[in-house]
Structure formats: structure tokens, C-alpha cells
Length: 243
Image (cartoon, rainbow, N blue to C red; front, side, top):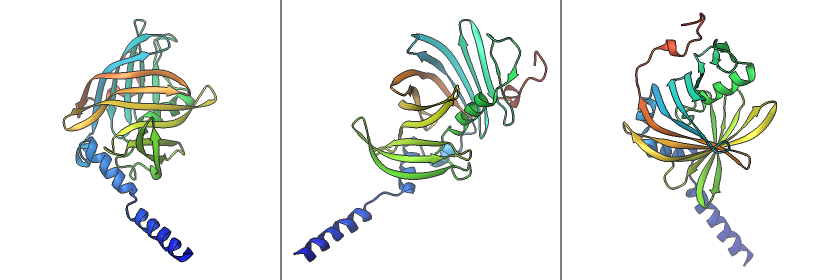
């Protein structure tokens, strides 16, 4: 009897292994859900326009973002009649903080590191090996009643993030990472929703951010443009005032 039970358990184990999904199968499902790997790889520049909603202050701020892959980024946010600019040209991370003065300045080390990590987090599942990102399939999980695949991402700088993909569609539902702000490490979750097609590629038009048990706010995009041509000068640190 014991031998029969052992053989039955071994059979179940073999069947389970035969139907277990691999990391490459999960990524393939994700690429197909987003529009296809070739189209994702074909994105060279990205322009996003929308608004930030701060749930704690009940305030809305217009935002514009420029990406030039693999490592250039510029963000402009308007608040209280002022424009905040943050940018990275591949070498220097800088900003214009009008409440601290009108001149552009290099970002302090902590803020620069955080800003650069935002760029590396853009579509990290695409060309991850070339970008020095290691991805591991952790296993299935439950995300508020939805079955998801949990992936662990380790970046070149040692940063670790987790991505949760819908088990049915393969689309990204949430990312989770620890960030250091003000000398304190906090867990930050980004929830992706309202996916829409742009030139054959699907993007989340709403990204809600949560820190701990608190909802920090959300970004809602009204416009996303792929491969719009814009000059490198918008990312470069203005060496002289007025550039």
C-alpha cells in the first residue's frame, strides 16, 4: 500500500513539473500582451503628457515626460505657477527647483540615484540581459484576488524590485521596490491600470503609487507618443544661464 501511495505521489510530482511554466514563457506572454517584442524593442523615444494627483493634498499638477532610450530622461511638473524640471543626459542628473532659485543645479547624490533608477525601471522586462538586469521567477502569488506571476528583478546597481504579472494575460499589474528617502528605506508599490494601445503597443495610462499603507497619489496620462523626434539638448545640463 505504501509503495502504491509513493508511486502516486511521484506521478503527481512529474505531472506538476511537466506543466510548470518557465520564465521565458511568462515573458513571452507579457510581450504578446503589450503588442509584441519587436514593437517594444522599436521604441527609441517616448513622450508622455498628463497630470499628477496628490491624494493627501487633493491637488493636481500637470506633468510632461521625455524618454530617449536607453538612459536619457526629462520631467517637467507645474505647481503653484512654477515649473520644476528634472533631467538626466546619461552623465549628469540635474534640476531646476524654482522655490530654491531659478538656476539649474546638479542633483544631490541621493536624488540623482533615485532619478536614474526611474529610467532603468522603464520597461525593464525588455532587453533585460543587455541592460544588466537579472530576472528570476519566484512563483505564483495572489494580488487582491487575482492570480499573478511574481518576478524578482536585480539591477546592475544592486537594486531589487518585484513585478507582478497577471497569470491569464501576462500584463504588468504592479511593481514593488524599496527606495531610500531622507535616509529612510520605504517600500513603494506602483499599480498599473487603464491599458490603451499606442501605435500597436499597450501602455498603462494610470499609475497609482502606494508607500506602506498610504496612497501617495497617481499619474494619469492623456497623451503618449512613440518615437517622437526631440533633440539631446533638452536633457543636457545648461552650463550657462539661459541655455
